[in-house]
Each structure stands twice: as structure tokens, then as C-alpha cells.
Length: 151
Image (cartoon, rainbow, N blue to C red; front, side, top):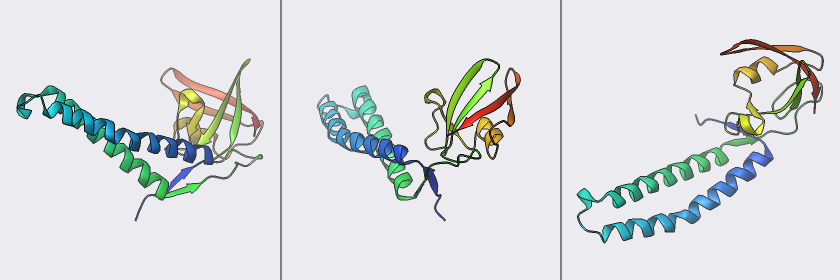
């Protein structure tokens, strides 16, 4: 059975754009391989090895993105009453506030404020309502956030 991926419309657009970019790089990588072949003996040709490795990485990522797009389920907007996939959550920690979007693992990018529902933070927040608190275990100890808003 194929894995089903849960992604947002925005995530689908980002993956489609990345796929288009990678497909466009195929000819560039092929040209690098052809140029490296001209240097002679392939067994001692570092440029050829690097170009072939780049080709492998590009082709692997293309296959991965195609699989995700073919087996994805689009997440509709999240619930406003409790934290679900697609929710945008505003958290308070003392006077500090943080805003995170809860997404599937494929789209997770903590530095961009996209938290996977399978991450420790995502698990702790899932199903909570405004006013609830969520305790997350971090390497520095436990941190308790209050859910200020769900959008």
C-alpha cells in the first residue's frame, strides 16, 4: 500500500515549483557529465564523479516529489475551535508569542514556522483549544505554552 501524504495547497505549489526547477536542471547536469567525460579516464575523473553524484541527487528528489504529489491528500483549512492539520496556532510563553502552522511531515520547516503534526510540538498541540496549555519536552527541559489563538 502506498503512503498517503497530507499537504496544504501552498505545499503542493511549492513542491510543483521545485519539481519544475529540478526537471530543468537535468540538461545542465547532463552537460556537466558530457564535459567531464571529455577530460579522459573516467576512473580517475573527479569532475565526472561529482556530476554523476549530482545527477543521482536530482533524479532521486524528482522521484520523491513525483511520489508525494501523486499520493497526496490536500489539507483543507484547519479547525478554528481546536488544533488540527492546517491550523495556524498562536502560542504564548510568558510575554513571548509564537505563531506556527500545523502541517504534515513533508512540509515541515520549523524555521519558517511550519511544524509537523508528528513532531513533539505538533503532538502536544494537536486537539487542544484556545486557553489550553501544552507542555513540550525539549533538550533544555519542559516548556509549557498557552494556546492564545487558533486561525
